[in-house]
Image 1 (cartoon, rainbow, N blue to C red):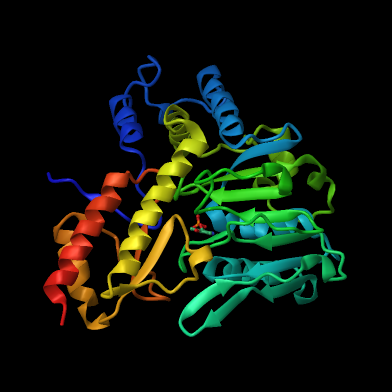
Image 2: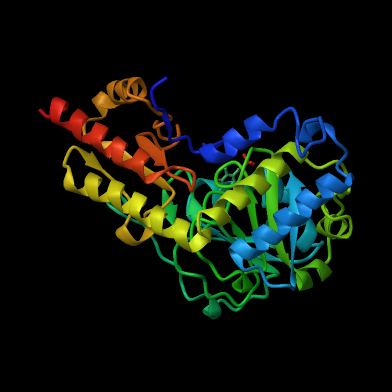
Length: 364
Ligand SMILES: *Cc1c(COP(=O)(O)O)cnc(C)c1O
């Protein structure tokens, strides 16, 4: 089999070393003679795994001790509702910044669960022709008492990223599903960080929640017990049976990240990967990117062929050459190369070679 480079936006590729380790110990984990999937989540072996996973995640992200780490069910969208139900109560208000598809979906869910009047929204995308740019007003001038501010620092579908940390008078809730651990951040600036696992952490279904202790005092709405942060904390993320295999793989990804030098090192590689791809796109008048320079996502590189009639041919030849899942999201069209932590620099360099070759052959 020739090399396949998988640019899927999610579920995304996992580090090869992790997949190989999982394969080698699939039937006999930790000398138990069974798979990690087939043992009790309350066994001492599995508990040891979860403890190490938390230690590693805390170290990777420098998570302060007044924050809890939860491993939950329900992916990214599960948290769209959990945040509302855990923090808003009957009369709290929240502000949602909208910079693309996922932050907009979070608003829809919040409005469904809380009253329309409890959810304020602010569109922070400015269009200049076809180019999108993020523009955030001075939040301190909004004279409002919000329980939290929700935003999505990396819009996976649109390829838009907000790199600056926000200056918010209210606790910040951030959907980091597609950029968690892609670069260093200061966790202490956030009230809650959540991420569906399938982009940068592990298999789908699992979500990681990092929540500041004091936010757990906020009034809740009635909700399913498995989505209750306080019960999650009290039961060590084991109020019910957790997704154990996903947790195991996440733990292996954390281990791999640490062995790769941690987030600071991975960030350097991610910057090189994104620079390589964007610089090529800018240098070649066959392709274009439609996001302002300072908001171009480091994880999801969206681009368009200037002659869109060639889209199908591009996808077909790319696939034949081993570059899969490059088609953009159906809502925005074009192409998207998702280059999460697990994508090696080599994959991006090879993709650029392919794109240059395709451009040469198809130039009018
Ligand atoms: C993928 C994604 C989600 C949704 O995740 P699910 O696990 O499918 O619910 C939410 N937010 C962002 C930013 C995403 O990239």
